[in-house]
Length: 62
Image 1 (cartoon, rainbow, N blue to C red):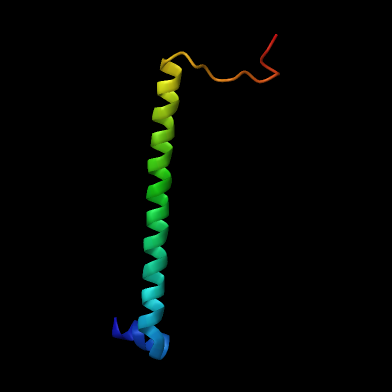
Image 2: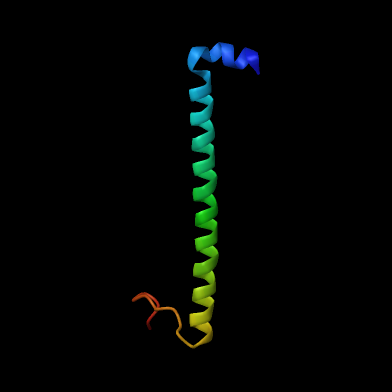
């Protein structure tokens, strides 16, 4: 690890902390998107179960 920090210079701590923060933010956003997607699928399934079907597009109507 010391070879890595020496290669980054005197600001190695800041650089590594920045990369860590970006990685944590990306993981958080990804988890948030996955959680929202699952919630939307559950909401859609609940609506369809109550009889609210999906809208037909103009192409689907005979």
